[in-house]
Structures are given as C-alpha cells and as structure tokens.
Length: 406
Image (cartoon, rainbow, N blue to C red; front, side):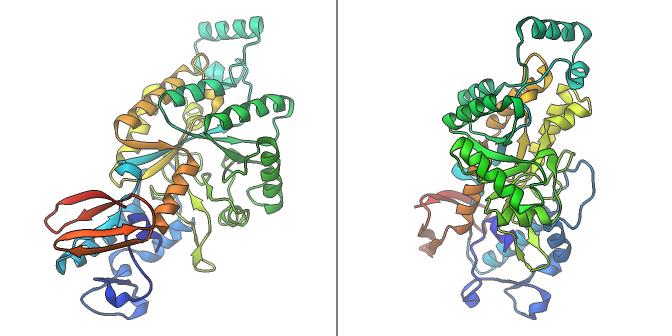
C-alpha cells in the first residue's frame, strides 16, 4: 500500500474483482491475466527492509532505488489498464501540478555566534576575519541570530518554512522567546528540535513538547532531533507514540537520501508487519555538512543542482536544512549566497517550496482523498472527497490530461 500511495494509485483491498488489475505477492497464489505479482517485478523484501531502515550504506547517495521499483510497478498497472481500453487515472503528486516539492527548514541550535568560532575563522580570509572581530568587539554585533533577515527573504518570495526550536537556550532564553514570536507571527511553522535523549525516550520527548507549547502557544506537529540523533527503529516508535505527524531526522551526516526514496513515507515496522503512524520526510542537504567539508559556493550549488535533477525525474521531494547561524552575509557569505540562489532556482524550476507540516498535511490529504470517477463517452467524470484534487489521466495513446476533480 505504501508504494501505491506514493504513486497516487486508486485502490481497494475489498471488491478486487471490480478492478482492471490485482496486485498480489507470490504467497497469495492468485493467478490470472489481470494479476500483477509484485515480487516478480521488484525485490519486495529488500524494498521493505529499506523502508524499515534495515538496509543502509553510509555515504553521499543520490540512488533512488525505491523510486525506480515504484516506476516498474506503475508501468505494469498502466499496461493492465491500457490492455482493456481504459486510461489510468492517478492523483498528482503536489498541489497545482507542481513538478516537485522542496521542504524548507531551519534548525535553531544557537541564537548567538562569535567571529572567533573555528568555522567562521576557517571560512574567511585573515583580513575579513579581522574586520568581523573588530566590529564584534566595537559594537557587540550578533552574527548568529539572523531570524528576522531569514523571514524577510522568505516573505519576499512568498514561501513558508519550518523553524525547529529547542526548549532551552540558557542565557539566550529571552532571545529565543522573541524569535518564536517572530516566526509564529510570520505564519511559518514552529517544530521541536529534540535534545537530551528525546529521540529514544518518550517521557523526555513529551516533556520537551509541553515546554515548547507553553513557550509558544503552539503544539508542535513535527520534530528534527538535534545532531541528527536517531536509533532505528526505536526513534520512529517514540515519535509515533508522541502523536507527532512527522520526523525529518533520518538523514545522517551525508548529502542525498539515506532511504533511497524521494517521497515522504511511513517507515515499515517489520516486527509487527505494519506502518509506523508517522511520516518521515527525507532531508537531502544540510549546510553544516558543506561547511565541515570546507565546500565552496560552487560546490554547494552543484550538489543542490544534482539533488534537484534526480528528484524531478520522480516528481519527488526533499528537505533542506539551513541553520540561522550560517545565514549571515558577513560571516558565511558563500552559504548565504547559496541559500538565495537555491530559493530562486527552485521557483524557476516549478517546485512547491513549503514547510514540513504543509508537505506532511498535503501528503496525508492526498492519501485519504476518495475519488468517485467513471469513464463515460470517452470522458472521465466524477467527484472527490477533497475539493480540487489534482489528477493525471494517462491514455493508451500516450496523451496525459491534467485536471482538478471537484
């Protein structure tokens, strides 16, 4: 079901005889011209293991093996419909027929940043560093806050993002409350930046969620754990039990896709043979990784361009993480330039640029949308439980029709 949901396939587990094709496994022992045996087309067990986090190789990766498997399933379903003279109608991936989706996020680790930090010293020339230090000592300028500037940049481009806040900034707690008010007032999302072992302890996680709610008046709907702390599969279980809608931690300190899939997905619980009740949003780029590797602006842009190219091939999505501390034109001008370039490049390529909760909410709405459609006089007519759900009608002739079902 998970793979069919990704593809927008309309299916039922009941009344299977009314559908042009049936998808089953070899264990079902179903046979017939309209029966598609999934594990004869793709390595189903390996795919489920990847979706459960059991198959993983460390390193940068733009391999989207699960997406390729899903394409094979889709080709078989499409052929089954076309063989009996029917078009295949599926839900489109994103609102307004966007080509792909980028989830814009910011981890708020610190609210101040000194020019004496080793990353600042390493990222600038001696002359530039001396100027930064002189300004810092003379005026007390804070190079690490940057949240008003981030909100202005994104507001000017009419995009919303997610800010993951911790619950304790120690001496900067007052500044943290000011930042939360700014983000909340802008209409951007406030999520939890979990710490203190919350990735493995439901009691700690719930306590942090309660503290964040008391501070912001917002019940966080998603989380990214600090320093990408994650314990498979315990963290998915803890996150689900806390009734959070999504996590966007499972990415490790590499570029690309830890699970070879560029869609939000429900992780698979292989012990109980079901899906965790939480969506994992794949994070494919984090600024700290580039800074730690001493990558220059052109190298960062090349990585992002390659990520976008492979994601577009599957009409998929990916999350990016730019910390507030590194989005400063003085201390990290190359990362700042990369961020501006990326926002404009995504827009020009037809991406839906949005927050994590907007992506998650859309994905779940799309999953649950019920379509009542029929073919009448060679026209697809009907209605949807969700107003104006975007669908694509794929005809045997190769023509694709895009429309919203009212």
